[in-house]
Image (cartoon, rainbow, N blue to C red; front, top):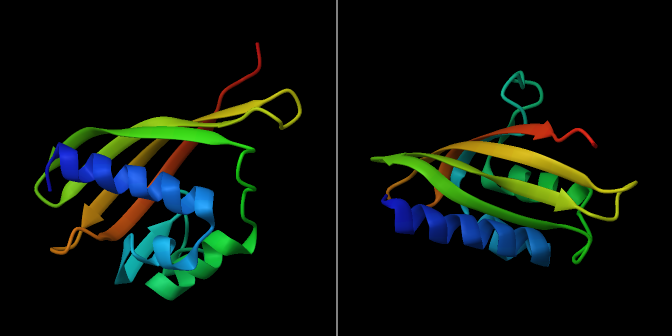
Length: 125
């Protein structure tokens, strides 16, 4: 993987999120993906497998147009990447902005095999 490959994957991630489309979501991940919404997730709350990730994304989908997001690679080395970015929900009680970091490991086909999300809610001024 190089920076362009990771940026293309991140752009597809945002597009899949916006579309709430199971096929687009599934195309991002390997069959045996390990997905952590928080770095402290235990085995009980870690999502394992492509189908489980798709189902998890669609449990409480964000409505299109209620948010915007942009992420970019911070570091890429071999099959591993770190990305940073912003997820913004302007309509939530005066707006909510999250600063995100993603730790990712990719399979040989460019799909994500391991994904861990770190997020921090920006305090309101």
